[in-house]
Image (tube, one colour):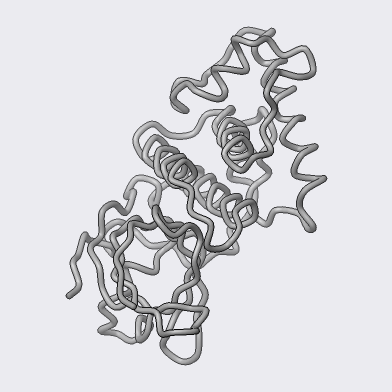
Length: 237
């Protein structure tokens, strides 16, 4: 079976001598695992399609009864170049991708989750990091995954709760003490949920802190950084 689907790379890992395996969150097929043959060779044409948070339209071949498909080509849609040259943005992008890996099951499509991740990466690329970004993304992913709360908790105002769930990520900048307290409470909601739901801690950044400088405090264990120059838009046929 051969099909095409839009997807965003959540994770990559070298496989055998020259291949890579990626976890891809797709629009129509949900989270899937795919092999990209030959990308670690010098002339590997598929290499840009295996980079973390690359967004592309993938052409995928799946043999009958095989659990893992193979990427045979595609067309890059977005590489988020500003994220790739800024450590804070890159840290947060890896965090979003890890949350998608940990909170979404295989082969269960959700257009809402796909568009949420793409929106977050797009705004992060254009507008940068703020203290509420990670928490707002987590709250929205919780809701899309069926773990969201119908009503505010911890005496968070309804107005603030709705901002965290529906306003543009880049607009979530707060200075008033009351808003900062509400944001801290939202951090706590997410922390409690993840501590209860996840079997082992997140490997990316510390997501629930008001100190922006903490966003870059965790060293990224993910694959080596690439600049936008290394990932020029391409089409492989």
